[in-house]
Image (cartoon, rainbow, N blue to C red; front, top):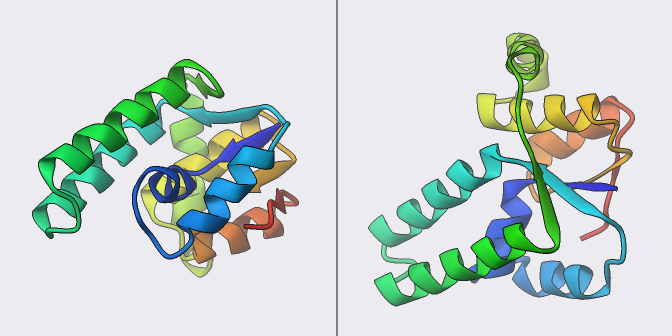
Length: 140
């Protein structure tokens, strides 16, 4: 099982520096891909930011959203979040040395609680904390 952070999903469906590498990884991946329902809100937020900053036009954002929804209905299993996961994320965030912000802490807490041994992320702070928590990173 590979826990997939939203940063990877954004790169998969929009043009970013790591998009080619993420697409190649996704095309060759045979393991189960999981995330949480939180990535839906985060993905929508990323599309909104890209629209407001002119990185995407309406048609591109809508196409990215459609492709994301298809992934969520197929290859990506979205798991619900429970209140204890939010508390775990809060504890991770309270550790100032971690550098984690709330969204990434929520991803890490969820991955740890579901027993994910691997994580796909493009976020350096999340990656560093995942490794510190004994979660192996997928090479992207």
